[in-house]
Length: 468
Image (cartoon, rainbow, N blue to C red; front, top):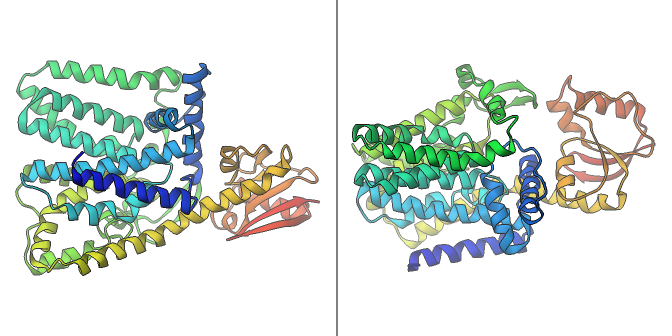
């Protein structure tokens, strides 16, 4: 390990200690995180005890690597969190390796550190139990080896590129959209060179990586294609900001066409994007350098942006898969800006403080929700076995092993409610998002029929009640 990578590892370890042990943030945030946790535990039990695995909707990559880490540390939540932080570290390294490869120069390491590693989206998702950072990691590794193959025509580079492409796909299905242009161009070269054995190798890789998916989901192998991410895609959504889906009514400040540019202009990603654009225009820096690989990345960014723009909702973490390409694409301009500005320690400190400030601001929501879930779970342990009417929080409590008789008010419309049962909801949230749907219908009935007694208020609209 060279000195730079040693520093990178040390930086990651220090951050992990602060986040995990000082702030006590265990990475669990939202329903998807608990689903990853559940399946990682099931996968671990399968390898240890031979226990049959249950159904699972998402790609197997993240729980599989979480399971491998769990064999080492015997703590599933920490294992998954470590997968995310290691993925962020490896992505950082491969951004610099790709810069050196495609621009044929020693990279300015400050660029990747200041604008990728310290980006709020990267720091936050480097510690959240979600598959996005790992998928991002596999995606940039695949692109690096595809570029290597296009330059050197070595079979090993193609095999690695295609392997990491399949791992990215099996970690997060939408990653394939980012990778499609690189895969297509690489296969065109293979066919032109009549190197048909590489097509055979790629088929073998597909079979090896996909077999677990088909074995575990033999009856519903392609069910992921029925997700509304694909079925509800429509180009009209590019010009909309309000959507009605199975998740209720979602309203956003900006239309999707503006949302798809967030990874370049939003402080959650690239806090200095607009400033950099102004400086580049002032000094007449060229954004496009004529570099073939830069053009390929631009094409990939456009395709992925259009794909995300047609989806009937907005989620910033979906932009993470292509974020390294933003840094790689903008690297020539960033380097030129560094050459004309007086880059001193004070400027670097200012950029670091700005990035960390935005990280605290945007990360507050993740941290507060995580702490709320931990607090409620600790409070409800004493009610073991009791019926609870609940919405939005049941997956978290199950994931934290709180044993209750869960009655999720989303599934059906209730006619009556058990006396002395608990109720845990955020009424204000229901009234905003679930008009005319079961959650709000049942909540209104509970208020009318349940004679609710407040047991505890958790703030931000969350209350624990008891039916009298």
